[in-house]
Length: 160
Image (cartoon, rainbow, N blue to C red):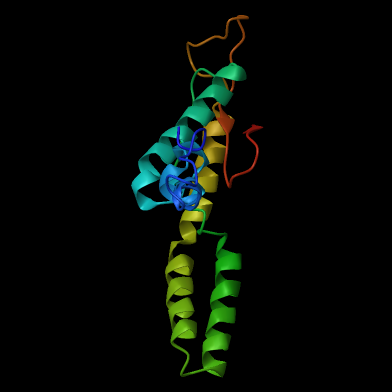
């Protein structure tokens, strides 16, 4: 490796500087510790795979053999909160009518407020699934039925 045996200064006075530049280069970082790479659009698929793997391992560790996974958006909030954010964005845009960013924030808040109804639908779905109790015909290794955990909003899984 170059950092272990760089050329002597007498042979190449610039060798040490080139080796230092190489080692400092983002291309030299290992992928799993290169946060710029991990945050890139190209690495989105592997990041999602890791998210699935982590969830799968946690479910296994807790003995959950069956689960329903519902994907949504972290931007969707309760309707009341969405309306409050929309009102605030509209007020800010009214106070600065020439501010393009304020207008953009209103447009985003309107889209989120329009989708906020799905928050309650998802909550109702989770409540209904939780009421079902044990998974019919499935028993855990101890002979007892496991309940489906519900996980929402990035919080800890909660049993219903």
